[in-house]
Structure formats: C-alpha cells, structure tokens
Image (cartoon, rainbow, N blue to C red; front, side, top):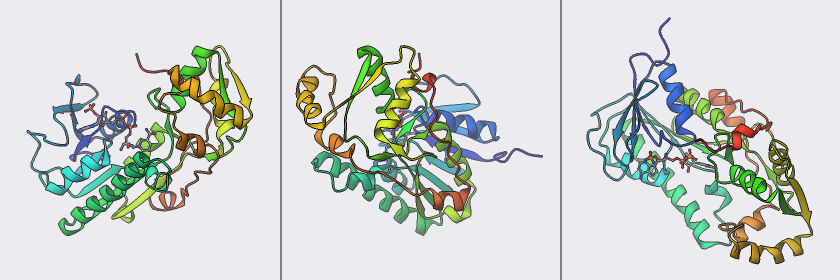
Length: 293
Ligand SMILES: NC(=O)c1ccc[n+]([C@@H]2O[C@H](COP(=O)([O-])OP(=O)(O)OC[C@H]3O[C@@H](n4cnc5c(N)ncnc54)[C@H](OP(=O)(O)O)[C@@H]3O)[C@@H](O)[C@H]2O)c1
C-alpha cells in the first residue's frame, strides 16, 4: 500500500523549531516530499529539502504545493499566506492558546501578543476561504518535550543550578502541558481531516494538573532531585525583586506570577472529534528537559 503522503508536497515554515522537527520527520516518514524553509542554512537529512529564506521574503518557493504548514510565528505566516505567492489546497498553522490566556492580561505587551494572534488567525481564514483552501489553526497550551521550551526546561535548568526551586503556596492554577510529539501527530492527523477546515482548535496536554504538581514532576526527573520549596506568597513576592536583579527570575513578570493562580484549561474534545487528537498524560523524563547538544 502507498504511504499516505506519497506523491504529495508539503511546504513547511518553522521546521527547525521544537514542534517543527518532529513534524518534518513524520511528514517524511509518511512519504511526503518535504520542503522546509529556514532563515539559517540547515543540513539536508531525513528526506527534507531545505530552502533558505524567511516569511517576510522568501525566494525560490515552488508555485504550488499540496499543503503548507507553519510552526513559525503566526502573524508573519498569516501575512505571507495572504500574499498568495504559493498555491495549495490545505494549510495547517500553529497559533497559541495565549490568544485567550493573555487577552485580559495586566501586561500591555502580553495583551498585544493576544491581539496579534487573534488578528493573524482572522487574516489566515479570510485569505484561505475565497481561494477554496482548507485552513486550520492549532493552538497548543504549554509546550514541552524537546528540551527547548521556555517554561519547563527553563525551570529544570534553574532547579539543577540552584539545587532547588521555589514556588508560592498559591501556585495552584491548573495546567495542561502538551508534548511536542503529540502536537506533531495532531498536525499530521489534521492535514487529512476535512472536518477541520476553517477551524481553530485548542490542543491541551492529556492531563490537567496544578502548577505546583507539574513542577514537582519536572524536578522528580532530574538527576540531583532538586528540592521544591513552597513559600508563603507574600514572601515569594518579596524575594522576586532581588531574584530578578540577580537574573534568576528574568522575564518572569507580575502577570506570569498572577497566572500561577489561574486555571488555564482548554477542551480537547473538538480536536478529538475532528481528527482523533489523543495527547499523553504528563509523565516526563529528564531527556525532555535536556537541551539538544
Ligand atoms: N513554545 C510554546 O510553549 C508554544 C505554546 C503555544 C504555541 N506555540 C506556537 O507553536 C508554534 C511553534 O512553536 P515552537 O515552540 O516549536 O517554536 P520555536 O521552537 O521557537 O521555532 C519556531 C521556528 O520558526 C522559525 N521562524 C521564526 N521566525 C521566522 C521568520 N520570520 N521566518 C521564517 N521562519 C521563522 C524558526 O526557524 P529558523 O530559525 O530555522 O528560521 C524557528 O525554528 C509557534 O507558532 C508558536 O507560537 C508555542
């Protein structure tokens, strides 16, 4: 029997990223002819042909392909797609649940992220519909698995360095960490799901757990078993300013602190119904938080 992608060509943006890498491997394994765009030169491997370029301006693209996939920034991708340079029948692009999570943030920059995501989705769907292109947007929650994410891998590295990690006692908001391989599987399944056209889907992980429990499980995978220290929230807040000055909590803003108390929970049912989305529960191992060499 022919491979499901045999004879079809996929153009992929963001293929060098943490979700992009496993997606490229799956496309090639399924027999797709894969063209991946990167701003850097990349080694040809695994049946992928790399093109040098970026979303703002990419030359040497084919005139038409069967599918375009994006694991890059959604706003830049939507703007590229709206120009209509490459004909295709199907588009699957990653966005983010930040579109909802950050829309009412106290932080103006975070609200701007949500606005740009919302506008990018609207631009993508508006450009796809009149051209008869089936577009889908996939919105992951908190991504982990390749040692390249900015949340759990960062926590793991910091905890290793400090031999411990502190959280406030009200870090009880619910989270749904999602593995990069489950996201790549979702994109593959979505590609051939006609019911997914003109829709956006939340892609949460397969388990909903409290922030503190999520961090406890990360720390439990690490070689030196760093201790999780739970501090009264007022004390944690007081220690945050010197920690930021010391560079330990750089980028951890007040909005992120407030979010630790919030439940960020999304429904996987539409993705399950339309393309069989079945993410794993959160059972991490150390390799998932080890940055690639
Ligand atoms: N990480 C998360 O927790 C998370 C959560 C929710 C949603 N998402 C979304 O999921 C998607 C993939 O995320 P990720 O974490 O896998 O991303 P990532 O590891 O940061 O990789 C993104 C890739 O996009 C490419 N890229 C960036 N700017 C580009 C440009 N101007 N033109 C062309 N390519 C560009 C880069 O490729 P080159 O450097 O090779 O050019 C990079 O490999 C993104 O849309 C992201 O917003 C991520």
